[in-house]
Structure formats: structure tokens, C-alpha cells
Figure 1 (cartoon, rainbow, N blue to C red):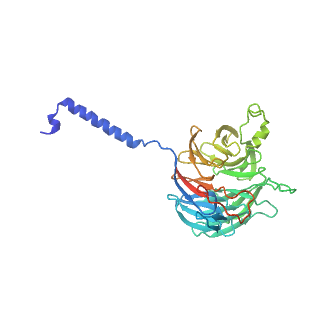
Figure 2: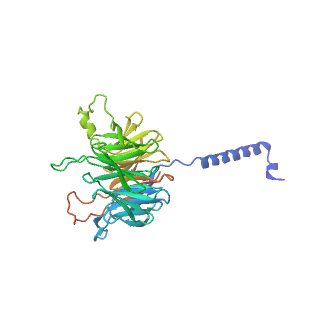
Figure 3: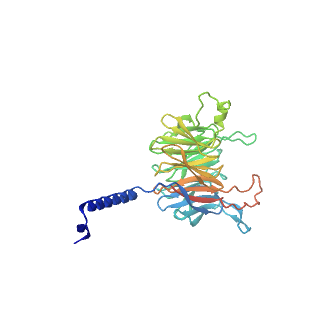
Length: 396
């Protein structure tokens, strides 16, 4: 006789219910993973002054633009580091190779996943260099048109049309010379030549964000805390709207004139959520993100993030926004639903730019070293900083 046959029926029913509850609990435990917060899982130091980074979704490589400098190693020795593009493994952050950029000092980076090309903006020389990521060869070099400013900064790619857009800062005068006009370069990705120049869309052009489906490009104006919208068919500015909320009284809480307050906000970069029709304006001076309803052209929310907010990227997997706060060395994570900061993560000396792998949702942040004092001679080496010139990986 089996054990179950020797037990009273009530005991057997109770045991059956316990087994059912246990199996149900186990199923729930498997189906609902424990809640996890974003965390920094890897940190790697690279040689040179690191600026922008980009991710290749095809092979999970991370590309970091570094300018050359003279550095002090941990043992006190001094050596020169040439500019280049450091290629990192997206999982381990191990250095895979280094692309020699020659006389190009890359600051900004944009990656076309379809053509496997990197577009590097060289602010020092006023050029955009094009690199084939497989061979590491420079395949093209695009110069500023004669008589126009070459202060190139940000680059974005429209993969649907194989077009690259580059912001040219302009707006700042030196001495008695008139201020150069800002611009947006339009580069044909098939030939890697300059197709058009959109002149003076704003006073000081810095950040860019693109909506390929709507055929719209957005340009931030650092001088006037506003955003210009450009039609990608006509290359004309269709409208301009504020990138900071205006108090109802027209004055700040301290009674200051709002025009001065708004101008001080300094909209440095942009990010876009095309699914929700939102534009995120990164305002450096107050250290906050302004959420703009694109259809209305109105600021609908302001989110304080941290000192010296510099750049932001939207995670397509979670819809969270990651903000690099250069001033306080943190990464702020903004919940896409509540629009509140859900986490602050340690960045490094100067968190610079954010890049996100579209499929895995892994987040990468570059951290520039504080470096030498302003005005230091070129032969003065850059001091060693444990948290400087690093790339970190964040598990969302």
C-alpha cells in the first residue's frame, strides 16, 4: 500500500493544496524578476582626453573619440599620446584596438550602422573626418567652405537617407572681428561630400536631434535658450520655440528679468523621443532637463538633474533618460513615466556624453579628465586622475 493510500483523505487534500500553492509561488517568482536599479558595472580608463562615444549595434563595439595630450602615468613618467578612436568591447570594456586618426583630433562622433562609417568632428581644424570601422582607414575629409566658420561640434545621422548633419557653432566673436554665423552642414553619406549648408538657423548652434520619419531636425541655441526646427526637404527653419519654461509673472522668484534668466540657461544639447512626440532640452546652467511637447512647441515639464548637465540619451528599452552632469560628476536617471530622477550614479571627473546600445539597452558614458589648468603651456603634462578619461558601462 502506498503512503498516499494510508493517509486520511483530509490530509491528502491539505497536502495537495500545499503543493499547488508552492508551485504557484514558484511560477510567480520565475515570471516576475526582482526589481533592479541601474548600476555601474564596468569602468575602463583610456589613453588621451576622451570626448564623445558611439555604439555599433552590429558587433556591440563602443567607439571613444580621444584627443592627444601629454600625460603623467601612475609611475610618474611623462609621455605623449596621439589622437585617435579607441574601440572597446561592449561587454567587458576591454580595448580591442585603436584607430589612428592622424592629424584629425576627434571630438564629436556619429555612427552610421548601415554603412559602418564613423563621422568625427574636429573642432580644432574645422573638419569632419570619415572612418571605415572595419579597416580603420580614413576615407574622406570634409572642410569648411571658404569664408565660413569651421567650429564644428555635434553630428547626427539619418540612416534612411544616408545623410549626416553637423552643427557649426558660430555666434562668438573674437576681438573686433564680427561673430561668424552658425550653420548646419548637410553631408551626403554616399559620396561623403558637403551637399548643402543651412546658414544661421540659430545664433549659437550646439546640439542636434533628428526625427527621420517626420523629416525634421532640431538645433539648440546656446545663446538664447531656444530650439529651431528645420524641414529636411527644404532645409528651411519652420519655427523656433523656447527651451525654458517662462514664469507666469515674466520674472524669476528673485524678481530678476526673465529674459536674462532664460538666456543664462544655455541649452547645450538635445534628445528626442519620437514615439511620445517629446524633445528633451539639456540646459547647462540650471542643471535641468526641459521637456518640450513638439507638436505644441511648448515646455511641459522641468526636471532638475544636477550641476552642469551636459548631454542626455533616451534608453529605447526602458524609456528612461540618462543625463551626464559634468559639474557634479554624476549620471541622473529620469524615469520616463513619472519624469522624476529615479537614481544618481557615480560618473567620473567630468561625465561627457552618453551612448546606448539599442537592442540590449546597455548604457555607456564617457568621462573626461579635469586635466591641466586653463592657460597652461602645451608642455605641461596632464595629471593622472583615477576617474578621468574613462568609459563606464551601466546595467539599466
